[in-house]
Length: 120
Length: 238
Image 1 (tube, each protein chain N blue to C red):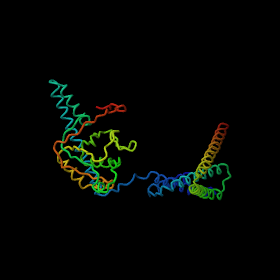
Image 2 (cartoon, rainbow over the protein chains, first blue to last red; image 1 turned 60 degrees about the horizontal axis):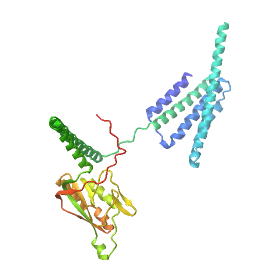
Image 3 (cartoon, one colour; image 1 turned 135 degrees about the horizontal axis):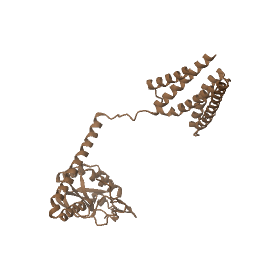
């Protein structure tokens, strides 16, 4: 767990220190990509806690979701319809659901542990 | 197995962190860069300097007034107040003003007369252009065909007639009187008007401008209407 947080910190510091910028027109795509990746991440954590984690699903979902979201946004820009809202909505809803499930599982585990301790 | 999951998560987290940081960098771009060259900065500086000197002269004139008030507070405060009110009326255009200035005569061009063309009134656009030109070059008080220009003066077309202060301007010839701060300023304005492109603009409309030599005592009429101060409010100051 700590290793993955280290990875996050490493990524953020690398991004901030190198001061990479993308053209402002593409900021929209990147924000959707960030949302998609967060969604995949929390989906992965949930799957892991529910013991249904699959490596292939996780990695392919990560890249596929990002590509799909960016593609949808791109299509939306060219058709004049705000299609990226669809992506934001879908990912946002899923993000909240996943986090809720994760919370429940952790709470249940915690309560179980407490019970076990009390019995002992 | 567990280790592999951890590695995957680490890599994904790394990518998320990188993307977030890049997004942050993009959104928080520094303000627009200053791309002015030395010459533009010099001009800016010159403008600010001019503003400063104007403000200083205003301060000194206000100080003078204050000094007058203080000196006259025992003797005759009424006199001092009346003087100030008179000055303000003069600045607002409510009093007849005498000063150094030039007179501009607007006439139909010789060609138009020789060809027998109809003499049409001056267009508001042209008149506004001329007034702007005058204001740009130290014209202090202006009257067009006997109609004094004040802060709220509108030059516009009403029912096909060019009006100043809602009163119609004569068809040319008519005269425009301009008072400047000093005779020097008048001379500058005179030279500027003589060389200005606005002469060409007038010529397109079959009109010519004749600018008289600067005079020391030009009289400009007072504004004869009432100034509507319905929407003015006293400012909260000092």
